[in-house]
Amino acid sequence: MIDLHCHILPGLDDGAADIEQSLAMARMAVDDGVRAMLATPHVAMGSWNPSRDAIMRAANHLRERIRSASIPLKLGVGSELPATADIKALADAGEVITLGEKGRFLLIELPFSGHLGAMDQQLFELEVSGYKILLGHPERAMCCLDDEKLLPKLRDRGYWVQVNAGSVAGRQGRKVRNTCIRWLREGLVDVIASDGHGPGRRRPLLSPARKTVLRIGGEELWQKLTFDNPARVLDPRR
Image 1 (cartoon, rainbow, N blue to C red):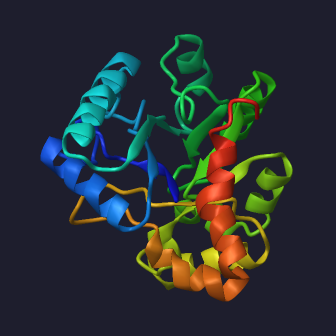
Image 2 (image 1 turned 30 degrees about the vertical axis):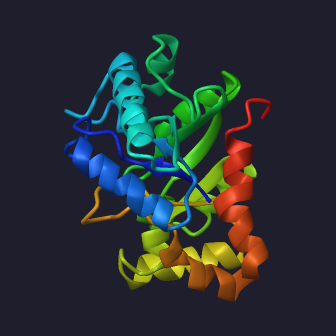
Image 3 (image 1 turned 90 degrees about the vertical axis):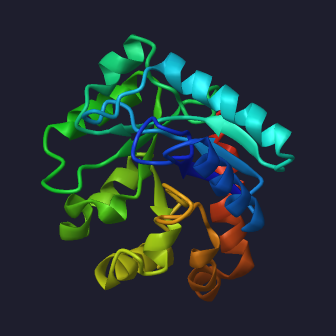
């Protein structure tokens, strides 16, 4: 499996606090069946705003520690960007890391409260600039929970949708779980990721969603959401 969304880099945001937690997360992910993972720290989100250089240094150091510990995990890099930030300006300044570095996908988090409003124009400008958009856990965004037509509209525009494994498993409550199940049944979900934040809370696991996905679409859907589509996101030709 490939996990496209995880806060495994130590000390950069609200994810892993130190390198030992990062290594514990890497071991958990491997034990869960993950063989490739993207480190996606928050960028331009309040006090969580590491520079591109800081992210790359942390990722290179963690890769070395993963190799030294003989953990069979391939670690890539990306970033998680809030739709409320001026992402276009960050991209022009070279501070945005696309998913896997070589592709064109940006992982963008919709606001947890409020409506999309003027942010819709920014997303459109990113499209025009040649970026592709992967919406990170929209099941946690009130604009998508309150307006059932919004996510289908965004997906019709070509945006991809990533939901959290924990959300599918019910760890964000019944309403969020039911929303995820409806989106899965309607074919609106492209990727399942962990959004892992630590070895003790919001762990870097995909398997909590497996039983639900199998009931809806069997092994074929599970393979599509946890390997085939993530691999397509990382393909620089897309």
